[in-house]
Length: 345
Image (cartoon, rainbow, N blue to C red; front, side, top):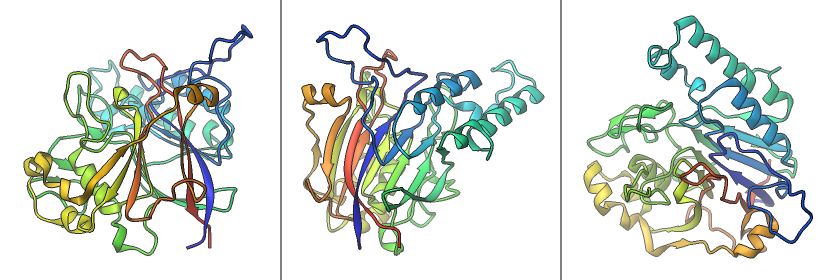
């Protein structure tokens, strides 16, 4: 397979953040999330563009995206962007103080802004991805296959929810044995297609991967972890858990396909049945040079042929790119990844 080196800038959980510019001219370092962010071939925003899904907040998100230099910009929603979740909106009329016509207006307004051909997002070169598989051509000649999903396990009645025993990512045949399968568009298996996905783009993290909260709870999804093991993309981008910011490289074992499809209960999977799908010592945290991160305005990882090339189907880079901390302060840096992606045929 012919590939081309591709630079990807990844952010998540921007929650109406503004790219600040230093005006004092002094020697005080820029905060990590400040202009200019490094240019890239592809920008990815993994959800939670807003605080409460208001139209003016979406415009603030687009204002921020306009300041980032990337010819292709891919965006998904998150649980805070609930006006993009029509099922949620129409089932929460009373809690949101809305009439049905008012809710339908907000839904349409948000949809048109992000997805209509003449909406602001499309006109400004931003592509909003709904759940499923997408093929995207980049200006550097790459063609990237992305699986996108804004859904996360239910928490405090936010948007795009599913129950903890519901599986939104696997086929009925590969779901955990006691899971309720609700997947309208499962993640493709690595071995089931000539064109496996290159990037898994979800708002939430997989179970036990940069998914622990400050209370010690693991907010990651076990069903998503199983789909990740089956799909084994080059890159998995997510956010949602602000305190989980960071990057890891997972090396899959030779038994990954077997483990990701074997009949297993949710409890057993969470208790460690998934471990044998990962190679021995196969989960490596990516160290960050803080000084260079501040200079670059991004944490950097090179897994292209100029760095440590990823082995497709055997290794995956996981990135939690949440910009905000738990206090909703934009203190975390974006992630800048150099990676080999397939050339368009």
